[in-house]
Image 1 (cartoon, rainbow, N blue to C red):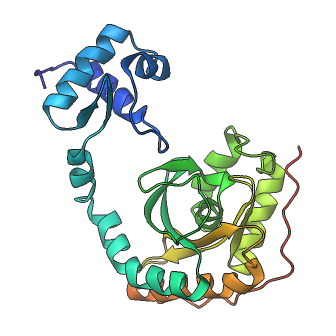
Image 2 (cartoon, rainbow, N blue to C red):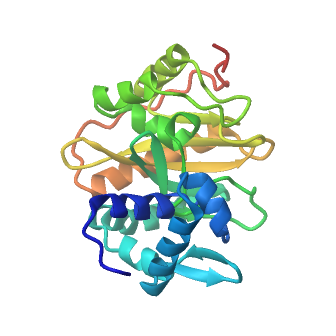
Length: 266
């Protein structure tokens, strides 16, 4: 990549890389220019440099994220430690429920999926490893937000709550009440809030000092998953993983007062 001392150049590079979405296979220069708001000539110059560095790869006339990005991502210590510790519990959870299991962390107002263990015949979920979704519209996101510091939760409640599906929680008051319920009951639910026909149960994962590190979830088709049945398994797995990571706080008693989708109207 050509040497550049201007910090704004790095910002433009970041915008180009950040324009790729979880569902993308490859993207053309014109689409990247549209997503970033940068001139097409600028996008073309940046992509050439990123290809040279292995951060992007050519795919016909389009480009896709390169393997080197994955390699760099694997060096992130906290996420790698969390993923490595979680894998045995995720495998057991998948075996017990026969459904897709997620591990996600919070970054800003979104969740990033660190690992996903799928099942044959499972639903085509909107999540992908390394992909992002709005935290308020996912079970893992709500599980993390419910146990996050107040300023983190407030930043989400005060911002735009995008409607990912027709059942997404987009009213701050309703979301705040749902987060309070999650803190009380120890489990979060996604009732088709991230995608039609898809439901999940999620519980937070805590670290040594009690801080929330991420969340585990079990997801599947609404007509195949009994949330009341999978919730205890998710809750137990998340607590066991938390213990492995050094958490010594009290084990929260799982409460299941009746599972229903909260209204998404304002």
